[in-house]
Image (tube, rainbow, N blue to C red; front, side):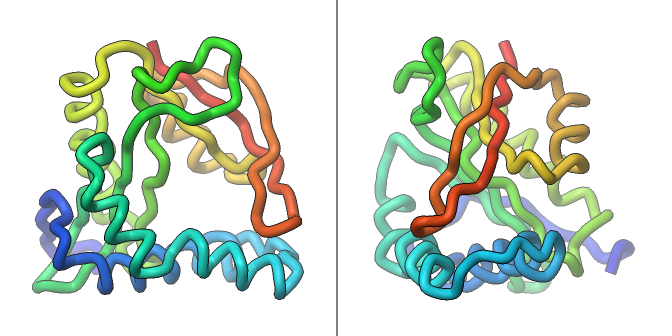
Length: 177
């Protein structure tokens, strides 16, 4: 699939249902299939319903303080990025600063450049909408993502626990000045 083309565009309200499916699939490919995190089934089910339900995605798309982009090929969504006000638990983080909440590509889209294109769109938007440092949280076990963020000027500045139901993932806080 690496030779296929794709386009990046802002997500629209009518994307909510298909974006919900993409977000859930990308989460499962990454953490369940890829990293085999042993989430307890009840915690996983609650997290997925709360985080990737159509109503939740529709609310994110309708919120003017948030922005989401999708990468698509022939009408099929391959990847997405979602940003908004910083909500990370760091003493220097403020809600008027930006946060990259999510940047995920389906396994089939890895190596196509969708992540780079989505990161560019997200960082450009944050630079104009929320000038100042950009924050993100990344799972401590995802060394590949950490390396990508480091290449883009992000540095580890803290750690926190990210709830997945009653389970807690160990996350790192990264910041880019």
